[in-house]
Amino acid sequence: MRKIILSVLGVLLIVVAIMLAKNMIANKQKPKPKFNKIVKTVFVSTIQNRDIPLVIRANGNLLAKNRIEIFSEVQGVLQTTKAFKAGTSYVDGETLLSVNKDEFMASLQSQKSVLFNLITSLIPDIRLDYPKEFSKWETYLQNFDFEKSTSSLPKFSSDKEKYFVSGRGIITSYYTIKNLEVKLDKFEIKAPYKGILTEGLVTAGTLVRAGQKLGEFIDPTVFELEVSVNASYAELLKVGNTVSLSYLDKTTSSLGKIVRVNGKVDLTSQTVKAFIEVKGENLKEGMYLEANLEARSETNAIEISRKLLINNTSVYTVKNDSILSLIKVNPVFFNKETVVIKGLANNSKMLTQTLPGAYDGMIVKINKKK
Image 1: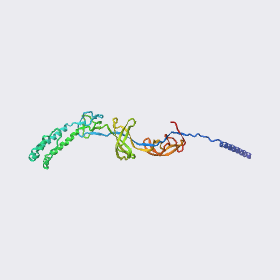
Image 2: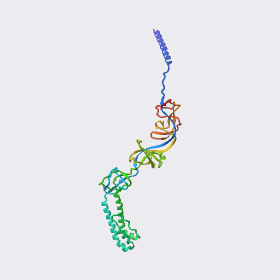
Image 3: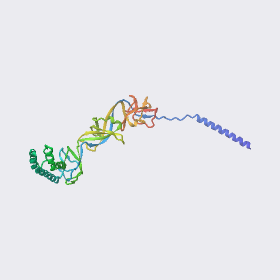
Image 4: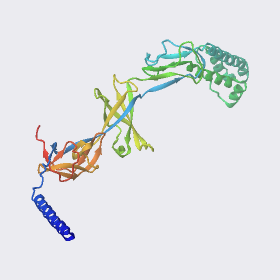
């Protein structure tokens, strides 16, 4: 019985082995599945090298070139002929504001009276001791005018005369008056040029103190734009160069001129500040403008989008209208969105749009639709 069971199992194993062998042979003879290869379509442009002007772009706010902050150097009640408020315009030499000087004038007249009395008391002694000098002092006394600026004292003919006059306190009194007369001019502030008030911090009737800020005054016809340029381009900034300026929306543009270049590099940003003078009726202080500083021209170059530059060293071109080729180039100038490169041959075809998954040697098809 045992031999029969073993014989049956052996026969079954042989049958199974034969079936498996036939199945493997049948599978081996089946054709391999075919996959359709997808060829991506690319957009290209034909390279034509030319002279590319290198333009440095920078932004900044306009500031009035001529501006003054108005401070009071004396104390008193403020007086104005116009409303001392932002937007009020003045012509050259017009009074911006004045401080009541009645009390100060009384003090000044008092000092003049002291000087007049001192010279009057001195005249008899000069007539006796210095008869040759009497006429000039008498003339000075006769021409003494309390309503006008005090004239200079007569010139001394000798040291004895100078010591004699000084000992009576006349020189001290004279310079006290001259000091007050200088201070008298500070009770009235005049416009140094035709301009406009941009800030008014006081009104008529206000009691102002010495050192108090009263407002700001500017010339609204000439402005300066301060821009920061990368230190590597500092040698390209030349005083006198013309600069194109435009609003951020590019709707309006004007021309400016570089008037100053700072000789110091900012330690934190590694930039150099340049100052551009610009004039225009439509310009206002505080406007945000973009400056385009033309530095130089690069020959045999092209300008492309920075997105097309691979690892800042290469770009993709198409050889034989079907094979991608990664070509090394020389980037010579970077703008915000573009880069100027050299190293591509004329009439070669370069990708104009990024291609996901691109690699050197990839098969592609050029889109020839215009």
